[in-house]
Image (cartoon, rainbow over all chains, first blue to last red; front, side, top):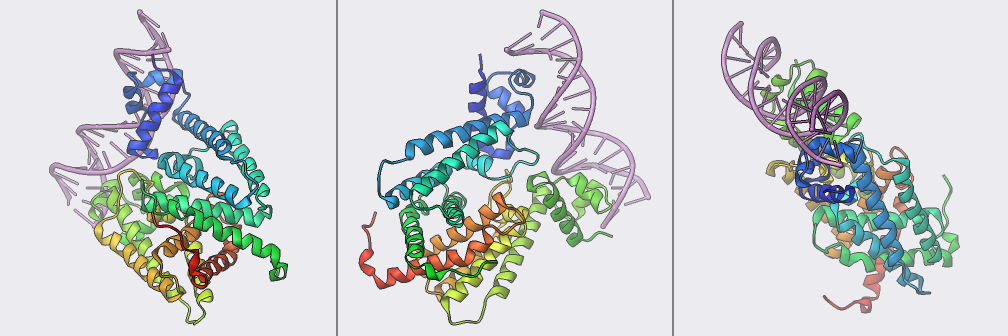
Length: 193
Length: 193
DNA sequence: GTCTATATTTGGATAGAC
DNA sequence: GTCTATCCAAATATAGAC
């Protein structure tokens, strides 16, 4: 009766309710009307379930990132769209955020196949940013830090709210002013390390 | 033989090695040469140990934040010092960062007494920022997001390195330019929500 | 594919002697 | 305060019947 997809969906519900690390095969089996051992017909291990969840989340990220790309020639508008997507994607699901972007499950790491999806997303993000004039690797790093910081604070200190989400536009304008001012005044370069 | 402080230190070592969520009372007891039940002479429960660790970490944060405060009249210099402290404090210990600033342990939350230490730190941080000209609550939030983002990316993607740490000065300059430009051009205000 | 039954480990926590 | 002994619950995982 329960398909693999249904099990994964039930697993998401469980971790959203109890915390990512609290996934239990017993509870999971029961929630789909199975006995615990039956899960092993679908997954090799508990980490295999985490891996399937990871792959699904990474794919959602990739799909939604593509969908969020706006057709505009204005770099600032495009940057805002990307950042809105990123922060709101993260803020929408703590458990998913922890699974995809942090290392909170001792012993779990995504399989190469699942990890590749994430890497593809990152590559596309780099392309999008480059199209907005963000090509300097350091500025890409700074940009991702801003997005991550907004998402992280939103999740940690105002879950379900919008206290940091509503700062997105302002933050992107700040960042954009920063990178454009650098182009205008290349003399502000500093010593290499 | 083992004092409460020694147990907590051993607990830190364990979580640094195995992950915050992987703290085990058995292993902990063995690492200090005790039998597991003996721990209950010092702590009421496992979460009580997490709470003691939380309190210690929060106190370290408070102490180091005070020590990191520089005597200067230049707001930019002061802001850089604060941000350096914050990011480097976080980057120095993933487990501590997760315990203090994230909710990765299902079922654990700090006791009121421990949490108060964190709130005191936050209050002092707000004072420090205000002294740098960052008094608008939204700008305080943006500032903490930048610090958190740098720390988070550093920990997630370059643990032990300095890929985001070396962006701190640049990020603070960006932020400082942003808030000062706002003061200069108050017309850039936008509609309220 | 799903079940029952079970193995095995580990977990946190308690009782009570010393 | 520390120990031994034990409890109880939960965990993941396997074997084998159906």
